[in-house]
Length: 495
Figure 1 (cartoon, rainbow, N blue to C red):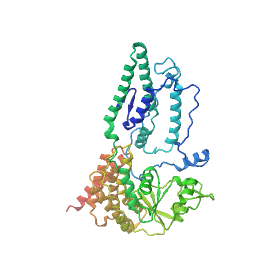
Figure 2: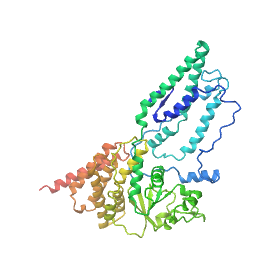
Figure 3: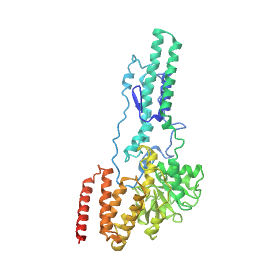
Figure 4: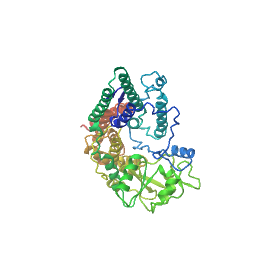
């Protein structure tokens, strides 16, 4: 982090944009902005077009689809507290610009309308951009805002450059030596640029950063031949699409974007390039799929039963029709969508999903506001996804099947916890619950004393890592009860 006149840049990799604004303002011609200049128009060759639909209809569909992906990082997993999202408001400088005697203005033709127009246009673009950001992940959202919402930084740099230009003009008028002051301005600007490059080159140098690429590669290589993958969100969608289409990885696999499938033009174009993938309508409408032109997720899955279908990452809550005919089995960061008639063999599935990824990144090894952190967390939580699924399934069972699933869940949790020294805090909480449930269901050959010790120990470890958990009082009470039961058991077994 470094200080620039009037602003603090928390994401230094944007210095190129900031320097461009500075340089533009410093050397802005006095007659560059004309009072008769027309309003700024949005659009052009680089303007992002959502779809070919009419604007009003398209905007509603965009809101329904939740495009740009909100990551479902196992909603059932306890998440740690996130820091507050600090406001980064624009400097109140436009009002001062209305005063033509202000020393920040170059010549009589440059008014505050220049700055205000740019700010308003950037604000308008930001509204469309921020509409679909992951608001349920405040830390990640803060990083997204820092990287892309740069109006305030740009305004400060423009005003600072205008101020330098005005200072140069005043010194030239009062002292003379025009060439000297112009040289000083250029030297000051270039020195600042060199200093910024020197301070931030290491952080901005991502030549050896392959985390996102390896994330997408691990998912693509893990699925069976001729699979159909329903992607959701930027992280899995963009990483796998790049590897699949640009590098030719897994040409047998078919990729379909869940959010984009809500647009008719996407379905029409994609169906022509994905042989063997059947769309039972013109677009997927998660809300009103009874129309003749639309289809539900259940209908889409029913028309593609000849392929193994995987959802990466998660499925939207708006369309639950698939639950009538399909089940969701955990498969790493994805879910395998299978017909409900297919029998589930817990031991075989646990063995199949035990080591599907070769992920070696340490836990918590990236900045909390980075996509690398999200990818790493997804891979770590994928290790316990089957164990959690079996635990949740056991809760709905009775008798011997219940005890069998609890034992298998306990064994999987025990294995991954013992294999790592640094792991997500919720693993301790889940293992403690698995020990307690196995104890209640009859131990299945395990020592009651060892299960009581395991449950109390990992509940305590969880509270050390997550002391602000809302369930902390209940967990402390459970620890006290477990320790009392352990003591009572020992007294009972003492001759």
